Image (cartoon, rainbow, N blue to C red; front, side, top):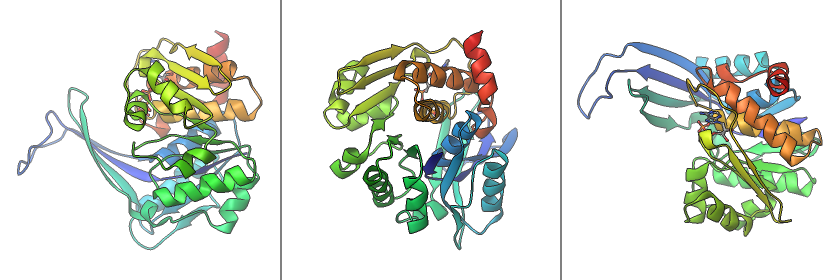
Length: 295
Ligand code: ATP
């Protein structure tokens, strides 16, 4: 089983020709509500990729919270650890213009009330083969979850997004950090994937830097280095490519696959996801990933 301790947001997406300036009103041409949040996305990605997954987090007592719960459950995710708290669920208010540019306002809502894993959450984490963390919950909560996993000998995968300074106590408890290139540069203060990888490995045992259509770069303190090309794909929407990649990577690693194999599995899953619109709506099923790798 894989546990995910993280955020659940409803994405409210308005599609416009040109984003409004301050004081301006524009008419959009399409609107969608899409269940998202990096925690929920990674949980769904891992479930689709073939793992049993438990999601630990919080939604509000509004309609969005109820919809998030149904979406996760329909993807096969165990939602017994998804708490309902008074007040609104987390939302991401997203404006996408005709050139594909976007501006986003995230209001954490229920996610912001999570101060740490409950005793029940810690028991679920301790019984897992891996814990997936991101930074959309309060940092103190993320640190406590990571430390709980480390104390139980459970590998911790951290997606350090949104990028922010990372305390040593968090990195000490992380097994594998999986930033994209921008996050890696923000955390280390150096640019260039190879240089950033060296800097990350001074603070974490293992790192995978995702490089969009350029693939991914892996390194570990044992000296292993792997460069994985992206699987060629006609990208329609790269939203949650990173979350799909991490979810699939954790599934493959928890099944005992070697890192090179696990990275290929994750690259195939992510490449399939960029060919479809949306976040949770775009993540491939296990069979699809296996068939894609075999072809
Ligand atoms: P997001 O924030 O959209 O979730 P990200 O910035 O965290 O994404 P990326 O580095 O853009 O993550 O992409 C993650 C992985 O997805 C890459 O390592 C690669 O395997 C795959 N990927 C991304 N874009 C493409 C593409 N255009 N074609 C094929 N694979 C892609």
